[in-house]
Length: 395
Image (tube, rainbow, N blue to C red; front, side):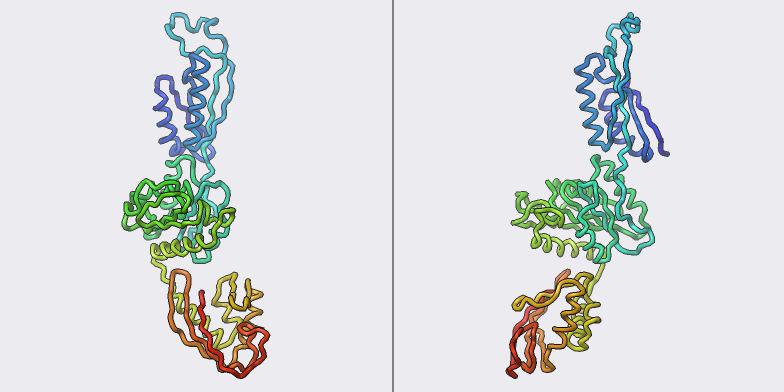
């Protein structure tokens, strides 16, 4: 049962009882958009005490996730009216009563909400920001087949935990979810997750300010990786990696401190954790082999492009040829790369290294230079000589 309005009479209770009430109970009892208040008689026998208590309560309410409004109410002279006749210690001596009105904190709404009918693995991204988080990072997860939601960190940890449990409750039997958290949100989730959290299968924590539980002190069922910026000056051990030249924020594309190299390493490790947690198998070798066959065997530019990501790019480093984006790269394949490969071209794979999100091939290429090959020998007329080249392809 939820209530539209709650009022708490604190006449006889100590402040600790009031604080426990709004920290532990109001969150679960007040409906969205509801309001609650209490009798504000704390320190009302002296103005300075009343002012100090008001500030203390306001700070504690803020930490609990509530915005407070103060409504001034004029109080008549009670002594003059004889209200305190016979009372040894009057509990009210002030000229104005400040009525506190607390609004329920309703900013913790799912953004890019999950589709309840979707069968995709689900990730919650969490950070301190109230607005939508780094769109590039979110898009990367979506491109990997994940359903993504954004949950800003609540000022009250208990409210934040409750929201996580609420989202878990909406999942069907056998479904699970993961969290990617940044900064203070990462610290909070790490603290929560050292005990089993229902349906939480993986946690990726970027540069938490501190880690109260060692990396090995988490449930074995939880797939975990912690990314620490070198400037933070500590290393929690366990499932943690340090990035020596980075500062907090290095993985956020919309920040000035974004570090492409460190962010790329962290991304590979994070994606590996997610795939293991959701038991996702991706055969990158098969995709790359099919791409190569279409490129060099079938020589079909359209089909070759279909094996690539939405915004692909190719860069042949020695000659700086290739293309960025679908349109330019398609034109490069169709007009320059595929038609210019000599019929004698042969490729022999020497070694292959397969990671979570990339393949590295060492290849020996040979061909008779019977036609111009602009992507490899730009501007060089055919020589009919045998060309042998060692290539490294990073996909």
